[in-house]
Structures are given as structure tokens and as C-alpha cells.
Length: 90
Image (cartoon, rainbow, N blue to C red; front, side):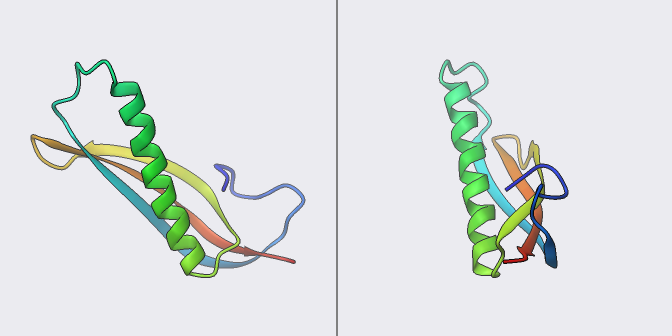
């Protein structure tokens, strides 16, 4: 997994496509002292879901990884991890 569009020393031979992982959390935690831990857990959960989807599609790697967050409702927010699943030359 990489935020770059390539992996140094590796050749991308096939682009499988977009893979997305999403994690949701209650929005009422803004003043929670554990918010940093909760945000880290949400990121890890979203990345794990994205990687699982990539593996299920036969990918060797995910490039161009990005994160986005937003409000689903007044009480729920989401964190999204997304990137491009690719196959590498063996």
C-alpha cells in the first residue's frame, strides 16, 4: 500500500480498479479525551476493509491511497480510505 502512484523497484502490470474501505463513528465524541485513539482505530478499520477488497480482487498492492472524512448525518461521521488496486510483475 502506498500513497504514491507507483512502487519504486516494482512494475505495475495490471490496474484492477478502485478499492474503498469505510469506517463510521458517532459524531458526539468531539470532546472525548480518547478521540485520537478513536480516529486511529477508524483509519485502521477503513484501511483494513480497503486492503481486504483489494486482496479479494487479486491485487498485489494498492497505490494512490487517500483518505476522506465526512458527515453522514447529525450523529454519524465516516472515514473513507481509497486507492487503486494493481497487480505487480513477479
